[in-house]
Each structure stands twice: as C-alpha cells, then as structure tokens.
Image: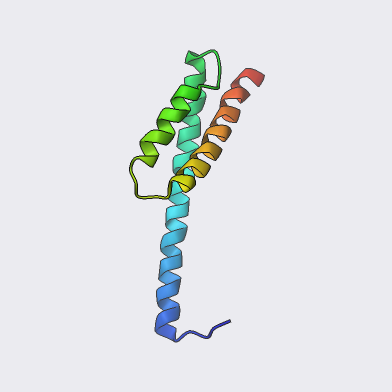
Length: 92
C-alpha cells in the first residue's frame, strides 16, 4: 500500500466522506422510491409493465451523462426490487 503525505491522505479522507454522504442520499432515495412503488400497486393489476420500464430506461439513458450499460444495469436492478416491494403487498 502506498504511503501518502498527510495532505493527500486528508484530501482522500474528505473525498471518501463525500462519497459516504452520496451513498446515504442514494439509500434514502431508494427507500422513498420503494415506498412510491408500493403505493402504485394499489392502482394496477400487475407489477410488470414492460412499456413503463422501457420508458424509464430510455429517458434516463437519453441524458447521456452515464454509460448506457450502467444506467440499464442499475435501473433494471432497482425496478426488479421495486416489483418485489409491490408484490409484498399481495402477500400481506
């Protein structure tokens, strides 16, 4: 492991703190998204809506700031877990 001068170590520490804060924000936003997904379940008969999922992916990929495969992978995972949250309503 490379030994860093104190100023570089401090800078790295501050960057990591910011990353941790971003991760916390992402976590909170995902929690809120899943709450909204559970609410939508009351208004539809099926948790799978291919057209809606395609619209979401297209809208986000068209922003062009992240690699499309990253957007696809991350949001496909989010949508999969959102559907699981929606299906919990049926189980309860």
